[in-house]
Image (cartoon, rainbow over the protein chains, first blue to last red):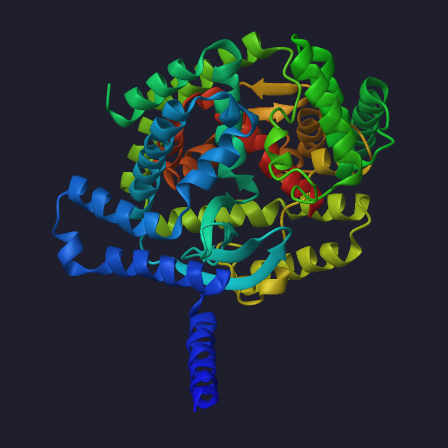
Length: 199
Length: 281
């Protein structure tokens, strides 16, 4: 009797695990769902009726669903991250997040009828993956748009976007380094605050 | 000036001056990061920084992939991809280009875009791309990329015939014919020359010694240059092309500037990253 219960429990446990595993989205699925959500939002008539500020806030929320901003911040700062104290780290992540969301939401609002083509997904070392997609413009030009993802947080999240070979993380890293070479982390935070309008 | 031997002499002169200036890089074009790191190491002022850079240089030799390393954030240390010894001059030219864009180019391109419909402007851009086929084709050959040169030729043939001299791009229906453009700067890189210092060119924007030399050499492969005897006609056509292109890209530079904490640094880094990708392709 007891044994039967055990077996039933085991089967139940196995059944529970199987769907969980199959529901854990692959990197490509994550990006595809995220991008389709963004496009869905952009083409929604209710969204179009909103004010620009409300649009940017809403788009920011959709974007943040597929991004891991902490990982992104760590990678962008690299060795400088460890030099910051816990408070500075805590302030940095949401500030940087806001800056990027603002920038990308603004660019997304300029999106018209370009088609997004999802291509292959490649596993990189140590729980990171790259998903390749292409933005096809109206005159047939293809702009490569690659996403780098990590599964550190338990599910796949984007930590870098590479457009035409230009990595966003690497690009900001250079700028942060240039500032931190001359000034303190506090100054960098101040520049970020000014940039996102929280002076 | 326009005789073939003169053109050939200039191209040879450019190639030799590049050889003389930089010398071949034994590491090869695809892995010149090590040299750049070393360059950074010699420039770095504080000891800690230069030590770290040297370590990176060692790493860069065996690890081509950013993430192929034991250290989790090993890829986070490739900060400066190009030496920039003339930064003051470059920043000055950048400010000049920035002002030129907002005060001259953008208003002119706006007015032009207001008059000419977008379809025609795209057509003109396509036609310019098409007529520059010799530049891309010859550089494919110079790099030994024969398959790619075939794709370039196919694209040129289809767009010139079925696409009304390149105004339309029917070749876009054949994705494999869409190749990344080759130029002489990339050819020099494939031949093993180092990039040289970063160089902000007035009107043309970010470049390097290598890419700048390449640009100069490419001018002589460019039909816009040798089709017209009068240099002012060529320059006028180039100016017109710039206005046409800009009218299709208004807002891009503004967004870039808005996103940047330091636009000069952002553009330098983005240019180098994009360039490295083009060289690798």
